[in-house]
Length: 325
Image 1 (cartoon, rainbow, N blue to C red):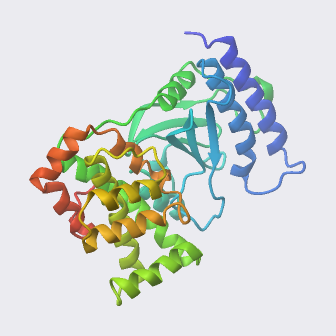
Image 2 (cartoon, helix red, strand yellow; image 1 turned 90 degrees about the horizontal axis):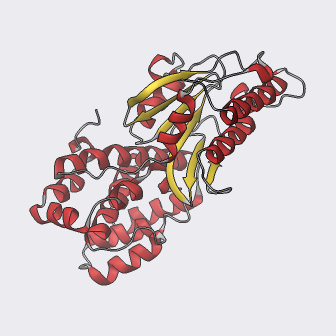
């Protein structure tokens, strides 16, 4: 099966741009940084080939601080809705995160594998991962991005990989244990990001942690705050979904709706306080928590809460969550 001329042209341009950037002439930053601009152009080209409208597919660059292990390099939105993530590695590392040797890369994969729609690439190869499992096969480009230039080519599988990636939809969990397992993995990612941001002294979170200790848990450590914060936000989103509150709204609006619809207990106040801080602290949509939970029907979430199984899962410590497999 031949690759369409459009995909061939897009990959050829990708190769020509990369050869120039990786040649060392005026290169600034790490090798993976040289891949970013050509990759963004490739994504735009393939999106157009897949009949998306111009501007519908946007790859939003995340933090480039090497100390952060949690956040992928790109969050990808389609029609302003988050659909997945792309992690970029230096050329030669490959696109199989299970084979990465660097300790930083292995630790990062241990966290990112909870994401439901994630592309790994080193420029030479591309792979799609869903909840830590390879979807399809690893696609290897024909030629080396450092030397092939415009002769770089791709097998037909590249277009299929990006089609599957860009058209991903959340799969609703069908039981309380399944919901707890999916949410727990995403909750752990959120906890890890909060921990990292606290270490960096992010004002919004350090201020919230101080309020948390003053009003609720005076002896809470940073680790305990991060854990409780992540669980409160995740559980708050579940409660909002159970009450039929649209998660497409700003999360501070979601919290306001919860205030008037649910009893004001310490737990609810905690949820409201943490959800109000979302907009000014971390990009929690980075981890698809709202996308996963938003895919559930009102009836399925309400039934889960009725039996109390999911409520118990989130009110327990993180160690009580089912492990992500």
